[in-house]
Image 1 (cartoon, helix red, strand yellow):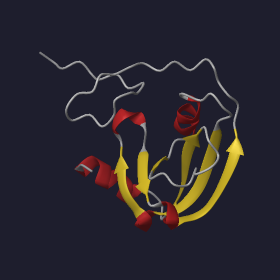
Image 2 (spheres, rainbow, N blue to C red):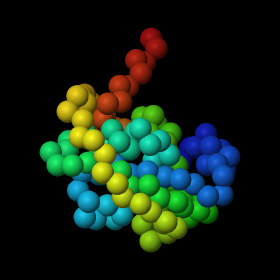
Image 3 (cartoon, rainbow, N blue to C red):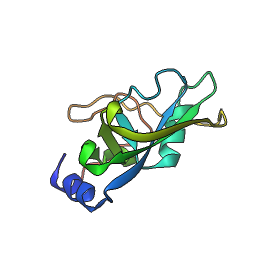
Length: 123
């Protein structure tokens, strides 16, 4: 985390509502990566879904958050699954209209595929 991300995490409340979008119900709580943005979680659930997508909503204590990343517009929260206070899993509509743009991996980027478009570097 950089300094901006540390400050953003410090400014959050002590108990957070986090979301995770998945397209398989089994194992939904095993992931480390969550988001504070419900719409972004629904996007992830639908991204490559061939089956019914699910939205997992959970509560977590800020003290249990391992990292908070702001890049790619994801408001990503990294937390160990066994630290979740509560959780619910619900079906969401399958959206066939989502488009995923391919972003080629570049050193310093954390993902191979995303709808994130890198900013043009100033000359």
